[in-house]
Amino acid sequence: MKVRFSVVSFAPPGVSLAVIGSTESLGKWNPNNAVPLTARLADTRLRSEPDFHSADIEIQSNETIEYKFVERGSGVKWEDLGGQKNRILKLDKLDEDAHRITRK
Image (cartoon, rainbow, N blue to C red):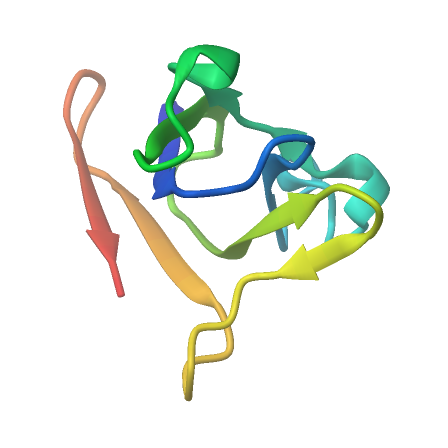
């Protein structure tokens, strides 16, 4: 099933965002294989406003994945979730056409 990963950010010019995670489709935690997010406004946004970044990624049903967002510029900056190590997404297959998504 296709899942849209999205985040709103004030990332500075020259920095791109990506999603990385525990599955092959999310790069298996390798920053070189992280999936780039597309910025909606990109270079047209004012520095004082945020931008919406997203990517649609094919994920297997009945799978629980862990993921984070990363900033890539001169290096890689991992998302800081405070006391939480990673974001968790559980995909439950209900039937051929319907899916239930649980995010922790």
